[in-house]
Amino acid sequence: MENPMDIKRISSNAALISAPAVIALAASLLIPTPAAADPMAPPTGGCPGARVGTYRLSGSSHIEIYYSPAHGGTNCVKTVSEKTSRRYLRVWATVLGTSKVNSDEGLYRSYAGPITFTGTARRCISVAAKASPGTNPANVTKRSLDALHCG
Image (spheres, rainbow, N blue to C red):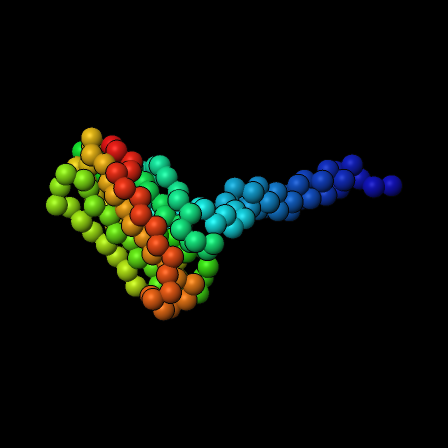
């Protein structure tokens, strides 16, 4: 016949052995997992503030505009590619009623920009963007958004 102390000891040891496994399992549930690829989700290198507009540029690219009330109003713009191959991308923006103009262009895998303006509270911005399906800047889709997103 088994000694009741031996059974208790076995149960205690089993609990001690399984405790690290339970802790590891619980910890793994806390680790964030990447979400499914959302082409309209902001890529790494995000803009400050909240996204206030997303505008389709082509079948594989779009324009994103962000606004934050920080620093007297902050606008941020980028042209985003939904493909991972290098392509020509351009983003250009101006703050209406000022001489503030900024742009970024080149061969990028994910986005052109971000370009940021501060002091944009109670001002509108105009945006222009270009994207090509490849590396040739002559073969582009263009879009202009005038007097848009007034802070």
